[in-house]
Amino acid sequence: MKTNGSRKGVGRQNTGSDFQKMLEAVFEGYEKRGIAKLRKVEMPVKVFGPPQKRKVVFLENPWLDYAGTWTEIGGRMLIIEAKSTESKRLEIGEGGITANQMKNLQGWARAGAATSIVWHHRGDVRVITAATIRAAAMMDAKSFAWDHLQPTPKGEGWIIWDVLQVMASRA
Image (tube, rainbow, N blue to C red; front, side):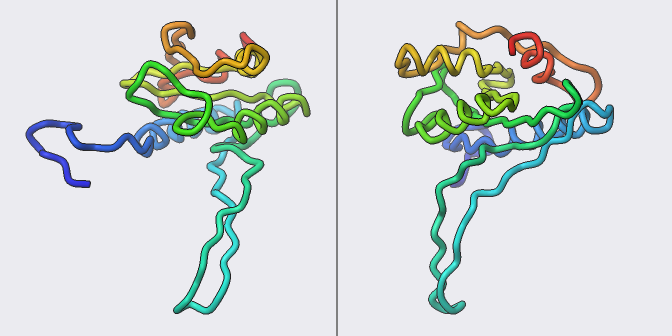
């Protein structure tokens, strides 16, 4: 989609790719400090047919955007879903955090992983912890509200948002 260079952002769709690049820089900062190691998880696909008539089928994904380990508690698994919105609401359902993503976040948390949604809105980040996700599921909530979540503290160096500090304090 083309954008008008004189009106920054007009006509651009929020794909979250800029946010994911910044988040990956944060994760690199964690790795350099020996705090955690996280990697982007690609969508599982199955490819059928010869090259001229190739068909790609996207499979159900039990993973979320990022998976890795955290040195807390001797090597705890980390599962993180990254979302970026223009709105101050993150819908639960199509167009936001899907039912499958909610189910998988809760399932990994029950199995002992540290899970969260890292939500980006206009240059800032909020962390939706496993406890908040559990509460939303029990109340059959339709969305998360930006203003009801605590700001994410800044870290040092590349850690522009200290996501793990929030996860550790609100586990």
